[in-house]
Image 1 (spheres, rainbow, N blue to C red):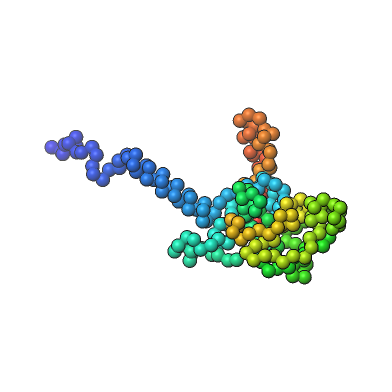
Image 2: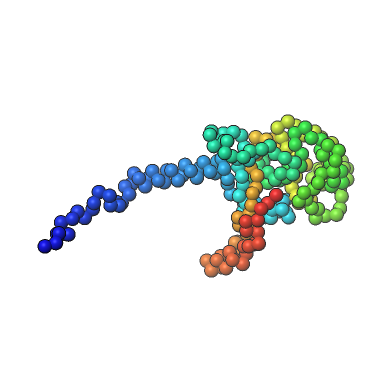
Length: 237
């Protein structure tokens, strides 16, 4: 007569068992800690709300930002595994807006601490040499003179007297030079305000497109038709 299979234990010691509430809580806490670590020290997603960096970065671009490249040594042993370097002229930088740290800006660092900067009739000179103008373009041919009778916003757009960038700061401009609120108007960016360097666009959707769609079906259709698919995973530099 064969063995009595009905006598076998229904739940052998090595069988899978349901997770306890404590184990689920531990898993959630670990996931949260890892997410906070990554967001704080490694990468973070940002959305670009304005056209000040067009045509390099468009309004509505969602970008992934490298937070450790320019960051201070603050992650212990992992510090040796993470490549770090100083900001270079021409780097794109994401930073807390000096006049309102709750807002994040993305601009291009055209001059570093100690550099002499001057803007004459839209042309940017750094240490006496014409800036390469990487990514820069002008949407308006008109040049505003340095006329005291003109509003400051017009004068400083195209003319900035010679200045030396203070220590621990960067002179940053938008690539859309005629439509950017940047260091020409509020001064250099403190190094302490840096948050990182944009890497690539992971999704691009025109600002305000969602608001123009009504209902769930409209929103779904708008996602596919409105998404700028050609910009997906597009490196930005």
